[in-house]
Length: 444
Ligand code: S3P
Image (spheres, protein in one colour):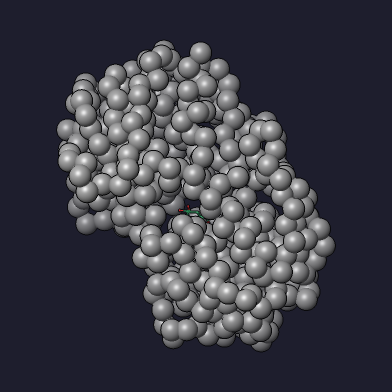
């Protein structure tokens, strides 16, 4: 591939040996966002620990500061953030002086809409070029039904100005998609609306909001596909200890699976079943991977993931009902599937088109560079694996500025015999700034 028109790239050298021993991954991104945002909404001072120190979470921190919360989170020796957040509580957020820039963080932008909707303020939300392309009507639609208004009137893309109101109405919302961001935005707005707000999803999405809101004195109801909250509630400060991010752990797990002789234990990872669908998928591929529970932080289970190099992997089918539980891991699972015998199918993965980049196209494009046949049929992704995959010299992968693609293609070089290059590799700072250093640490 010609490098002429690509942004600067980073060369990833082979690790040159097996990965072994125990490691930890940074704090969970979804839980970190919620800890910061919920603490900012609550009355009093919350103590947070293990918070992910990454660009995305910093976007949430800056956003709540602009709305009047006081954040004193400091970098710790282990790379996490810890400290306090004092929220605006019953007084509500203050009118920010300028638009709030959420950078690359879809979670910040979408949750923020639900957070400001129940207050008499007008907040303009924007983001970087990638975020400005991502769909927002899915959040605007239910919040408009609740009584918030928007500028422009029915917007699809940022920048969007949300005009909140203290007279928000509770709704029973049948969500057209399994999206935790949508569900959370509606539940957060519903926390301050009069009556019971519910969100019904076509398939279960991650449930961190339902689990964490009660810690902040807001009872929730939750069954497999329906989550609810009764407003108006009083949000009170709480303490949150954030476990490690399974989505980051998935990259270390894949590296161990694909690198001969490897055996690693990834400790203190969230084992929330809605987040470890990738473990179930890898098991079905015949991978040597298992989780062991070590306790819980609040209602979030956590423990250790043990992974060993697995010479023979086989393709498998991931049904549409399970997609939400693997949604962020599909790029790295696709790379594992590329090394497996037979065809792997991910059903109904249209959502991949509207992530930080069009991941569906980018996965197919990157696997083609490896000589692996991958294609889409409708919204299904097919990958015909090749256990004897030989990586050609001089490959340059386009990350499209997408952190999960950058880490996926970096593994081709790190776990292989020849270096590869990845464009815009610094975008890993969105979720896992020390990814490469952590990988290298495991080669002892
Ligand atoms: C997230 C939900 C998912 C996920 C994203 C984080 C969250 O997005 O892909 O990385 O923290 O709620 P959707 O809600 O759009 O499915």
